[in-house]
Image 1 (cartoon, each protein chain N blue to C red):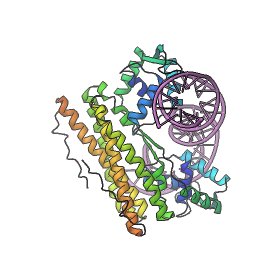
Image 2 (image 1 turned 90 degrees about the vertical axis):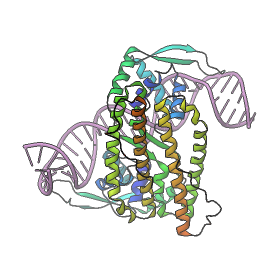
Image 3 (image 1 turned 30 degrees about the vertical axis):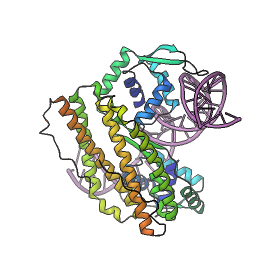
Image 4 (image 1 turned 180 degrees about the vertical axis):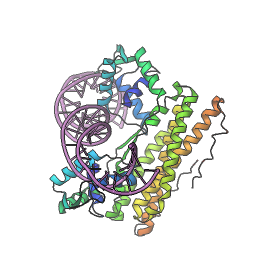
Amino acid sequence: MSIKHAILGLLHYKDMYGYQIKNHIEENFAFMWTVNYGQIYTSLKNLTDEGLIRLEEVVPSDSGGAPHKKLYSLTKKGKDEFKKWMKTSPEKKVIFRDHFMMHFIFFGFVEAADAVKFIDEQIQIYEQDLASKKEDLHRWKERGLYVSLARELGVSYRELYLNWLYKTRHTITASTSKEPTSKKRRKPLKNK
Amino acid sequence: MSIKHAILGLLHYKDMYGYQIKNHIEENFAFMWTVNYGQIYTSLKNLTDEGLIRLEEVVPSDSGGAPHKKLYSLTKKGKDEFKKWMKTSPEKKVIFRDHFMMHFIFFGFVEAADAVKFIDEQIQIYEQDLASKKEDLHRWKERGLYVSLARELGVSYRELYLNWLYKTRHTITASTSKEPTSKKRRKPLKNK
DNA sequence: TCTACCATGTAATCTGTTACATGATTGC
DNA sequence: GCAATCATGTAACAGATTACATGGTAGA
């Protein structure tokens, strides 16, 4: 549903091909939207059939054996549809499925050591993720007000989550007071 | 997939019926998981067929015309399956689809007044939501460490989101300096 | 040598969602 | 009088995910 409008929106910046659109969404919107190739290519097909986008040109791929890139552009109808969508109130629905959290609420049923192990895994993921996201923060300044504001929310959320993981880990190790906290204790991030 | 394990987990506390499970998840896990009746009743059916749960008893409904409540309980197999699931690392995948944010990143294509209007709508939703969530915070203390820790993350996230909305609204009205900010300006929440 | 990256596409499958049907009671 | 709550269930549909096929180059 909404993925179609995301494509229409992105094509306002420049003509794009499927692979590029997928990567763009993955890299930039991952904290608020996730997609896979199946969705992208079928959406591209449907949008073309509906006359909202058009295959503009086919350019050879950069590297060897890959198929040609198929650059799509917006049609008048596509621009109008996007404008109409932008005028309507955003859907209120939020879909959020964090498998770690689903596990987490049942941690009371396993030993604290297992819980801590899973939390440490999660900490590692979020630390790496945050580091890479912060590295290219400057890139987002160039892409306009709204994109960089959205980016900030994404980074803030990860910081919040990570701090919560630290705090939670500490609470668990303290309350069970088995595993030494000293070795793994970390300073919480500042809430800039 | 994971919804099945959520049901198995909940049935560790007490026997439950479909309607109750749906409401429980809606009220308690809404910030990390959403479900609908279709899913619940089909999951209940599948879990029964797989021998992981069992229809324990059918009790008359509290009020009039509603069908009888069908209380389900865990079988040995169900308990084992849940234990096995709890021992495995949580899936890394996070699915996140915030329709408002999808709209937001394209706000550069509409007039600032429209953007502000949509932001105000979103602010209203989150203010109400937060207020109701905070009201029954005390209830969560009773439900054990992990459930209340999860709850805290949920509330913190909403606070973060809301503060970000305030800040964003301010940034937009300031940069366009058309609409007066005075009337609608709000104090940011303290980051307790 | 093996993996990752580039790039498209589709079929099969699995989930998720909506809409409907039933029907008494409570509160506005 | 109307909407909401209680409670179950399913059929139809929409959406998401996986797995596969193709194939060359660059870097670990």
